Amino acid sequence: MSNSTYKIIELVGTSASSWEDAAKNAVETASKSLKDLRVAEITKLDLKIENGKVAAYRTRVNISFKYERE
Image (cartoon, rainbow, N blue to C red; front, side, top):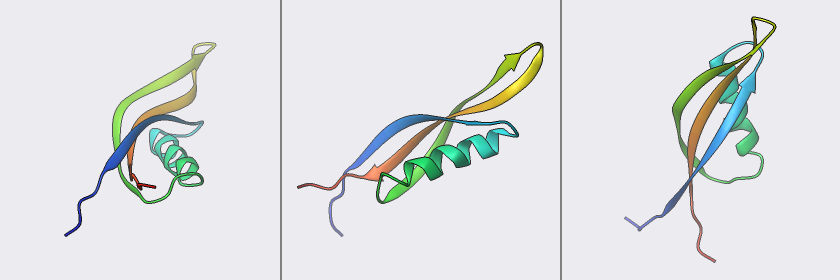
């Protein structure tokens, strides 16, 4: 078994429909520029409110990916 190192970043995904879609948006966006994503951990859920109504769902996500040495 080889030794590995992983980096963890924090992202906030948003969605007009659900926290699940907000998390999915964060992961899918990260996957466009990061390789070898491993685990996503939901750390916080919140809502954006406008005029007394829910305008957006926000999900804070910690995502880990394998760190490649040069």
